Image (cartoon, rainbow, N blue to C red; front, side, top):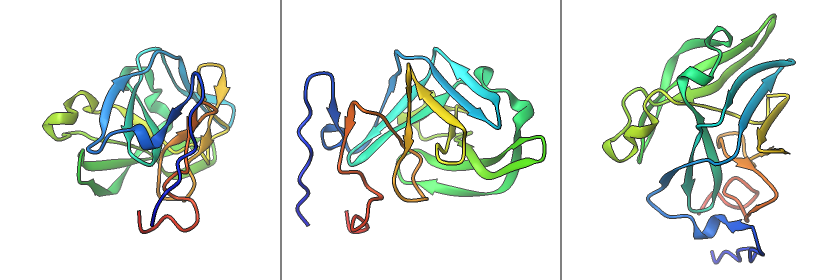
Length: 164
């Protein structure tokens, strides 16, 4: 299947220009996650993982995440690039988002900078912000990317993309 990337304009980036294997880079913008009115995470020291066809996945240093809202849960998943991920339920009062966050306790050497950094699924949260913009979730329930106005697709997870 031939993909027709949306051409980026000034100040925009195409996920089709992102590398494979993925790249980790520092984020210059402030990042914030809010759930049920509570600030779960906020940082000026975030990282993002860029991978072909995916919007960025944002990672927060553990010191910038309020651990009172995270409950470790059994189970894991394996990423061919980053290694074994562990999951957390995000819990605010009586509200629980099962496996709403994840981290890599022992990432592969190329991704060692991500050790214990925490990423959040955008869809179940009140808001996930990159700078002044509220991000939208990457299409498809499996993926954890955050879509902003300056990141263009088409994105993995949209209808008909399972073969990419």
